[in-house]
Length: 490
Image (tube, one colour):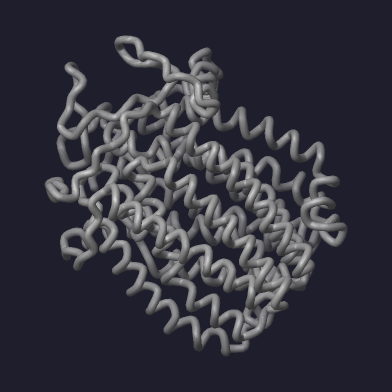
């Protein structure tokens, strides 16, 4: 299908920044988000205790999975076509909103009878709490989608400010609704909803003021393209969500709320270590959508893996005092879970970069296969080990599933790019240069001048629309044959 050009009045002028600077801004955001996230998780743990924390977890997992099931393309599909400059901001936002509303309505219609069905999972919290979680599906879907669209136009600094405001707002709402008013789990869910609403409003306002957003009716062609991409990535998206929450899902069927609370707290704490991977991936995706860059992806995998390993070692060394301080003594049984989840979190950080690569070259089906394999491994180990080890079996299952997914993605990356294992995994001097430039950008150092022929230490700066390097025109999806045959058909 030929690429459609954004409307003239909706054109976006991309910031003239290096990828190292973008990654630094995104990393600073993720660090702040991790700090605020720990505060939020700590407040929930101290106020709800393991049992209430478990009930809150099953409600949010329920809403999150329905978002994944019923809104294909709202996030990654709209983001991809906007980053590749094949859709205007207005068409991307209106299409994402339409998918969120339509899919969210279908999710609510299915959720209400399920809540009263007597399934054990829906007995881990009050029916009113589950119904509130179901009503949040359209809001969660659109909030996530609009955030992805802001990342697609590389407004990383604004996204950083907005996500920190969202986290701070959620914390304040928890204090008011849970602690002061004593609304318990219901208040915690309302706090989450308020945070998502604030995030969506801030993002829409920014796109209207700076990117020419004008809401209207999405075209059938735009919806078809976004849904088509979303359906190719749908298995990966749903499977990734299920695998991430599989322990809570299974524990919701056969476990106690206290066990769910321990596992949810441990996995939430460890998930903070993937923030660096998310920061690099957010900076990387718009550039891959413009021009496939396997050497750059391999470098990002190595840097992300090294940084995550150092952070993981530090957290595990201090795991007992950290859990006691953040979650209270009631959550100390979660400390062994952190050690079991450690290798899986390291695998998750590396595989996040590989998945960004395949999404950026319009090969999301590879992500779907990898997630499917990881999910099967997770489920198989969980069914075997949970009767023997209890909640620790759920942690082992999560680690095995993440490792399986990384292996399949790494093999697929090697086959599609024809890069050797040493070229992908062996540390290089340019890795340190990349990290140094990102760190200097983060600390506000003056941007170094790039050398002719490119800078090995930073992601390449974007070209203006229709620009070229003088040797090789930047290829976009639908514009011609990809380099080295790595990109599949849309």
